[in-house]
Figure 1 (cartoon, rainbow, N blue to C red):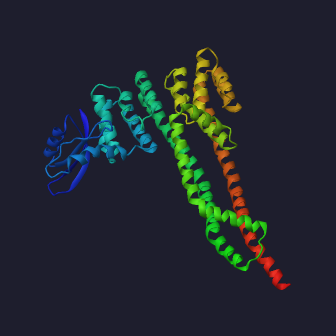
Figure 2: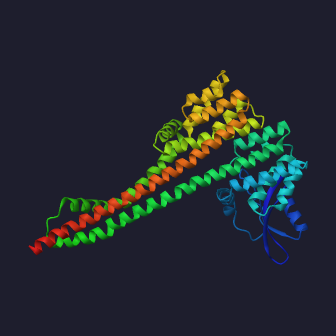
Figure 3: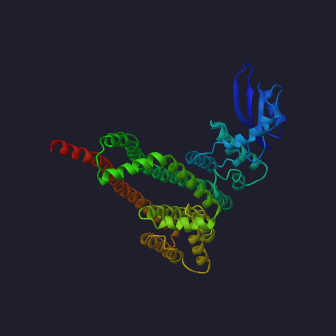
Length: 423
């Protein structure tokens, strides 16, 4: 049984959309007809399947129907972290009540209002009805349910504690959304301030400076070095400014493509990022906290430590840190302790290593990993606050210096001219 998205008209001609389970598009139309609806378009919702090419009379040409699946997959809306967290917590509550899994999913479908969420849950339920496990069914949407999510669900299904695992997953997803929101919020102020500063200086160089310089050229006055330098900068910005902007954007696109295609370049790039002042420590701290928290959740869900380290490493953003932590997992496999293996990566702070070592010795590794992640999150917040406290005033001083240079370069010849006239 597959999941189909449909568009239909009721008896009054009102258009409606939705998703429905059926074996074929023909069966979808039959079900809609029983409900008093006349289907005008039916297509499978899975991004890996092509859309249904059966159209009613008066529909568009066959050429446009060939492109429809491409555009539908291109603009297909993904579930956000907040939506995934809410779905996970609702599912955990229903599973804890002892309701069969397929009935839990059906209950979620009934109360959902957003079409993309209803389509996701309906597809997952249809896979479960076909005999697949929940973890395997979630693989239909890898962008919504990542490898960590699926691994934890699989562990919960094997251990028989799916409800508890889902609760921890909901907490983890909400926390990840919180960290992401903090990062975005931290970047908004510097980005806006930088754009305003660049815009103001560019406007002065391209509009104000040429007008003033034109007056100097009419007087035939010998200009000071500061003014000549300003004129050269202004001429360069006016002549090559747009080309520099375009070249920069093209370079960024090329860089992104190179990083995607070449693992070696990505490793070198990510290693270089970690060496940057302030930024490197912030990025490293975020990924270290993500690794510790992920490993804590996995070990509490009865996932073996080595397997958990492999999964937790793959959820990190920095590829260099991924490679280093996978090597640490190999050292643990060879008999080394966890904290000693992590210490050799030179990525974790001494406090995090001390907390993890205490957890290993006391047998409370899961709880201590969570505590280490909390400690790192606190350091992250303080580092972001320090970085913003430094960057804001520094950018304002830099912009003030640039404006002062422009003003002095314009005023100096004016003052010299006044002194000559006065003399």
